[in-house]
Image 1 (cartoon, rainbow, N blue to C red):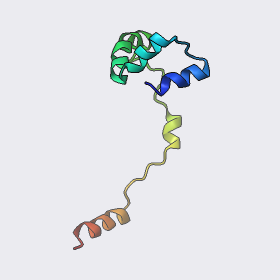
Image 2: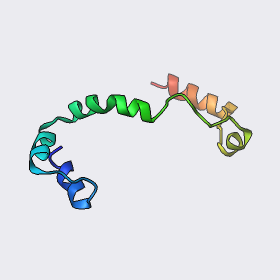
Image 3: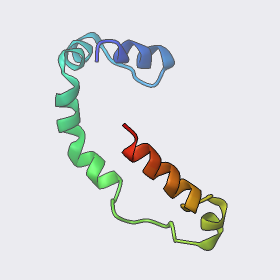
Image 4: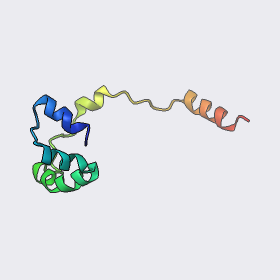
Length: 81
């Protein structure tokens, strides 16, 4: 946290006086994550997706299917000592 706070202050995103700055800089990132967990849960609902399966994407992804040559090559490589 000590390196993030000065960067945010330089950017103008965060304005702190000396007392809160020392308190925030003393916090570990795990403590900050624990304290912000409830607010993060309220902001972003999970499990809601707008992505639907479609044939357009399926046609754009090349799928390699095994051919007789691939099987022979695999067997030769598998049993070769």
